[in-house]
Image (cartoon, rainbow, N blue to C red; front, top):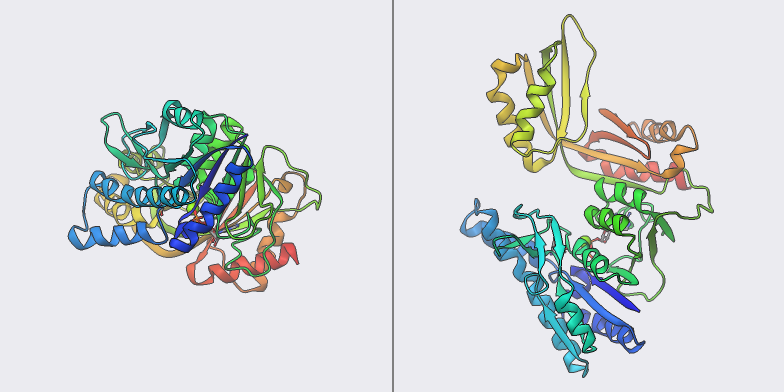
Length: 401
Ligand code: ADP
Ligand code: ASP
Ligand code: MG
């Protein structure tokens, strides 16, 4: 079998952990498999590099940030190869450039366009274990790019897809995908299986256990994906197209996202073209808008509120302020202290009252809901950031206890 194994930053944080992971890789190889390993930067390396850059230039260009951040993964692959060399195993480390992981030009958040199999396959043919840097690629100019925080999962899935690997295993510091973040919700349950669609929603809504684009890619190419522990050798969570919902669960999980800010444009004229003008301006500046809510008409005016990531908050406020005259609004409010808490589950398609149960949990805990947004398999609420952890816990209790 051809197996792609990805290990996250905490799994390779120090020498002892690198040796432990080398043991997992060596066993997989000894079983007769071809093994391609994708690694993240060790521990907090990426954060430390970001802090280092800020000391020199807080407004460093994204291009230079990518040159810097990509070094973290290069350290990991070299060290892991050395650990395997010491065990007497044939191994080679390769960077994003060496495997021709091609991306677009979106520095710091690049998308993978293609990945060559040539070099990796040559090495596998020599029966070598191949260790590849996660998180990085090269664009059409040959510049180094990075895929966005948590992007090593996507590197691993991309490599599994182009190599038609039999399995892509994402090893991390928890035993799989849980019904909520197991570090925050002690009674969270491990799921044996979850669908690509549900996992994609959970990942996009804040469950950082998988990079959302990795799940999207796994679904598109039908990659056999599993999330499992680097520390305990037992089955983790399979992410797949269809699952057996033996427990008939109404929802699969709860996610929280603190990286949300809410902006309210109050008292805009109730006439065609206003929403277009507002969101065109944001789109032109590449600002991603998430939840949008427009109130009903009150004496010829209404209010539009929407959310953007905290990183885009200042820029968004500035852009809307600058257009006060053309948008003709009365007031502008912004709030960074909001969080989005969401429930996700394909079970919602067939069972009713799921949203009501979530709202009941919040009501019992006296947590005020600011905005509600729903789609086929999710319900999200915006609430005060200070209530977010408690909200996740009470909703979890309501659905799973
Ligand atoms: P890695 O460094 O291995 O990529 P991450 O920190 O990116 O690991 O992701 C693993 C973390 O995701 C866990 O430690 C856990 O706290 C968090 N997490 C959030 N939501 C969930 C969930 N629903 N199931 C499992 N882990 C979750
Ligand atoms: N090292 C990168 C990060 O910390 C990528 C990853 O870990 O997936 O975001
Ligand atoms: Mg991660």
